[in-house]
Each structure stands twice: as C-alpha cells, then as structure tokens.
Image 1: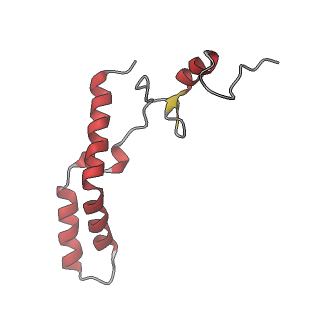
Image 2: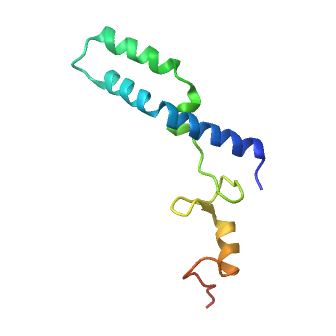
Image 3: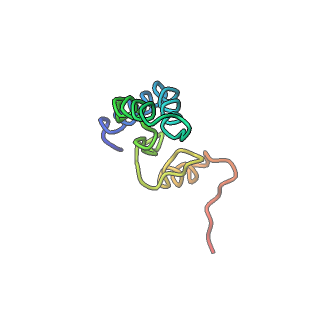
Length: 101
C-alpha cells in the first residue's frame, strides 16, 4: 500500500488538471500560433507559466486504483500487476485463469 499522502497528491493533481485544462489548451494554442505577433505570444506564455505546475497533465502519475502502487500499472485496467494477479487467483477477473506449462 502506497503512502496516503502520495495518493492524495496525485488526486489533487488530477483535480487541478481538470480545472485548468481548457485555459491551458487555449494559451498553448496562442503560443504555438506563428501568425500572431511576438508580443501576444509572449504574453500568453507568461500567463501559461503563472498557472499552477501541478495543473499540467504530465505531472499526473499512473497509480493502482486499489493499492496506490505507482510501478507496474496496466493503463487499461488501472491496477498494478500484483493486484491483477491477486484478483485473478481469487477468480474476480472474468476470463483470466492461472497458466501452467
């Protein structure tokens, strides 16, 4: 089980990302637009840099929904490899069986 502070920090980052996503996208669009003047683009870049760092999507870490583990997490399932194995051995994942050869 991961530390609760790390899990809560990640949840805070997800919430901030949702809050500022639209504004961040608009500002990035202005910054990348080569047709606008350099001043306008620079002002947009300053506004973008004043947004909270944790509102960036890149700061969000993939974590297991059950344990909070950050390594070995399957994106589609949003659970770690260890939790997936545990659940499959208990028979809680449909279609997954233990393999032996």
